[in-house]
Length: 288
Image (cartoon, rainbow, N blue to C red; front, side):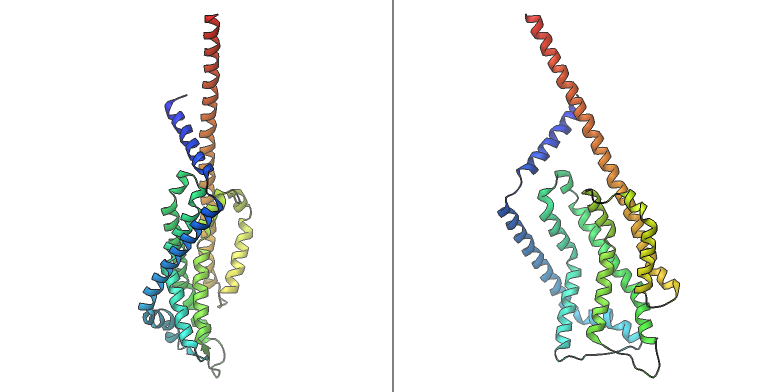
């Protein structure tokens, strides 16, 4: 057995030994409390930043599409606006602190991972944050403008469309957060493929079914009846599904490579052990 293979076997044993030592239940609770506190601190910092820019977020980001489409908005509750402002500050703070929250979640589950897997923390944090923010940007600049335009201009001209501001903001934030979560599909596939719950064959087998489901969802979510807007929503989802298949394939390829390496190392170790036994028996025979 070569020194390189021996080193890899020893490293694998050390990693397993480190993980087998584990953490007690109390240690897990202590770690969970620590990560939750850090996550809350990050969220509060994000909310503080959002509060500083809340008027910009309200007027330029959220209300300007309605104003451009001459959509009338009103408040119908006594404390509707204070509650609305707090809701906006909270959601904007949540979006700002998403990378920090994902990082804290990953650090919490890190003790259960191998040393090599712990190195994914920066990659997972960046990829998940980028995917989530990409979904929000796609929703805001592609999906929502056509929806707001449709809501403002559809119907009888004699009927004024006066919408409750809380309903309007809830619709906007729900669509953006939902789109952000949908864009996490490749990251979710990576994690599920790692733990063996999905594989590329399964995803490829139900590819046609997924396309039908995606088109059906696009037809429901997109308010306009024309197929162009529906495809604008559906195409990114189809691309994300295809990316997820390739992500699952990459995970499977990596697993096979590791399995082959471990098998080769174990075979070499067994051959080396057999050779040592034979040499020992020969030495005993010579001494006799």
